[in-house]
Image (cartoon, rainbow, N blue to C red; front, side):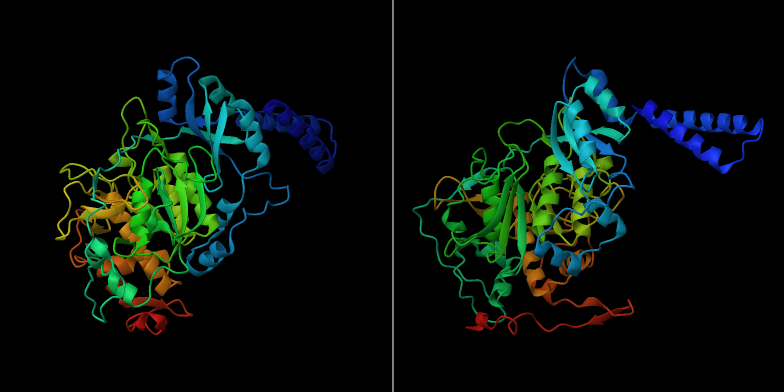
Length: 535
């Protein structure tokens, strides 16, 4: 096909040359020869197969006959320039407002938002075993294909390159220490600089008071008007009492393709993390952002210990951004895999290489604050133990501490491959109170950065409620500059334990109409905005 196209181009080019130049004996044959030679070269270039990544070439050499590979197929463009320009994929009103307020939209991001060229997708779809996900941002599709199919796809002129979808070893769920459901939960109230709280936090008060969330609740901040997306492995038992008041606006399982996450009964991890960020059952468990709205996405297959593919995370990020998510809480961390699966190493965690990190950065460019667990890899004196996408330059990576503020031994450490400090901040990740899937009113204590992450994501939601026009950079700066060790950040806990009140009240640069930055001091937020909190 590429040769025929080249031949057609040569014929039309020759006609054009005949019109442009007079037919002089000896001149026109020479011009035709030159044009023909040029077209042969151009035709040859068009027929060059798409580049296969080194990882893919190795995988193909090692694969058994007929074995399917999971690959990214990247297209050269988003359609012919002569065709009508396709419309960008539809986004919600909330997403449009968020982009306008906090996004950093450029010509590049607008181009990324354009849908894939349908004809390209159909061409590839005919030559592979199965199409999985389409990514507007990456201008690529993920697919299952054999070696022969990959070679056929690489010859398509619309395909630029083909790479492996990286796979990550699925981290086992953190163990949950069950709490006796018959034991009375004592009423506990956290002290506040303003007044005693009217909310009965039960034993969850410690995980909130450590990051000063109870004081923000006293001011009327609950996450109202903010949309938080939670990525996890499964969300069974959404009928649990702590979710009775939760507003879930959308849900999708990117593993099975289902439009709900309520049949994901293979793990309760998502139930645990969701309860930490947004649960609401007085006397038992209160999440920082219990007044927010939530989008739930299953991105991790918990039915076995097989690898987790990065394309699920990418597809989920694009979906929740278009749905209007302001915050992504991702208690997932991806790095190395058991052989023979290909994976990233700590050398790839430079904020630009891992596909999930790229997608997180793209979401941030559109005004979404991505909060991700740093990981449970512990300390290593010779290497980073972070997982992607925590290495992202616009990602808030969260480590874990105990109730005394001491770093948890399992909490992953940086730096990134390009020597940036990570994690960014920390919150309680040792014996954090969670809802479980064992019953409608069951609770437990769980340890891991999986739980310090949603606590921090909840604070981000409160910060955005107080200051809805904050950019992603301003949110990250507010949290870092007010955390417990902001004067001496390190690669163990970053800038330190989150201080929600200080982050809301900190001085922040305010851009003027001329683009200069002006510092201003803000009075404590937000009783004047939420007078009902004083009642």
